[in-house]
Image (cartoon, rainbow, N blue to C red; front, side, top):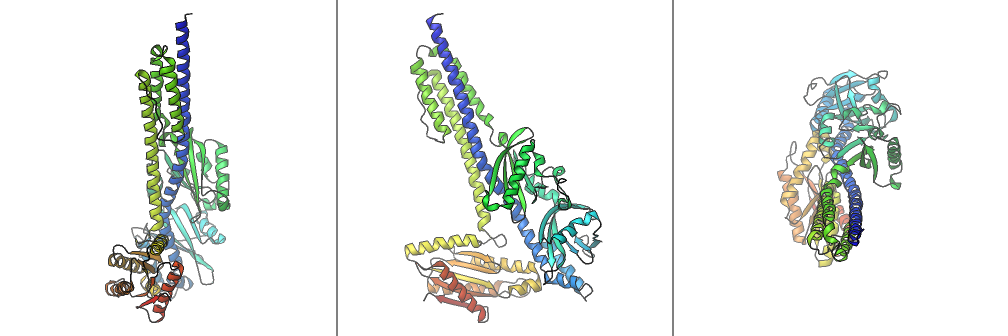
Length: 564
């Protein structure tokens, strides 16, 4: 065997070895990137999916709880034959029906077993009584089970045999003043609608599942997996999330982790991620326990679709092909044109794998230059995919921050959003030596509006006041719904004359321009000028004291205080 042939064989072996090294380095690098970013995407996706469900549900739950606290309904239940009480109760039910998202309600009475319902078509507006619940009928077992457990709030997906509908039901117990259970009220969201809007929204490679307290599937794109009426089913007969996994050990591990997240929330991460096998493919699962509704949110990511490694394959294939083509040309300058550039190329790959974007690529000529160009293309693809994932994370994070800072009813800042503005302004005032103003606005006799005109009128009153605050303040001022019927206005910068003028104008404009229900709305206003370096809590308390004095002195007036 000639030396030339031997040298060529050595060169071929070196090139083959380098090709294999490049391939396995690429595989390792791509898998690590996919796994690292996959976990981040899974965590953000879980928060995004949870927010999409909680946003509409929290409003419905709050309305159902308001309905359960309705004194009109309690009076009727306690005295069903009282003059005019039934008509008032039916009007109250209709008021809530029009506000519920699905425009339907149900009221179930414990003593008589009467079940009252009206749907979105107002088919039973004249006579909402539908049927009588019976303790010995399996279809009614859910009602008596919830009464026995005394659970004030519950979510379940259940078909109503009598009405012929299947919905996600929100059940809230109604009690008298002593705490005795009188019955149950609530509303239902059409199952197909919520599946289409929340679960099956055509996110490629992403599957969303919601399960109840015990892991029974409640919302899933394939209704055959949903565990209808899971409340009354014994353990062992429920369709739990482990049915979605190919391997029983995956299901056991996930259910065990869900139980730990539910029972020991402080000892476990808020969002848990793990790898499972679904339909023969490796998936990344993210799980969060939504304590406000007692459900789990489970997100499955098919990494081959969300972040496919195969998209890098053409680049690495071209790299290997060019290496083999250069065999006959590289044998006489092996070290100069191959070994040294390959070592530098390997260092660049390691740098890219470690997350560095400014990796130094060697210079090369001929085929080696082509190989380096294709590696640069591959690196650009990796960076581009990384940028896209970072942008997705940024967008989802901004959406979650927006949901957390804005009051859904009025569109103003909520308490959390205003607290952030207050802290920033207090620091700025201390730094620049400027004053700013605090104005508390509280609706007078707001409870009477809710009790006499209904909660819909109360909501309109809050929205009208919010709109006047939004349009009546200076562009650089901020207004927030602090809670209930209380609003807080931040005036910056502000002098005492500005504070008095703006607070007086707010009080007068609300009294003159609002017409929620019958008659106008008046507000009591407490204002205070905050000095630089003053404790923010004390300033808020001083303004709140001014509001209290405005209330005590007859309402519909302004009281201004200053630091002593």
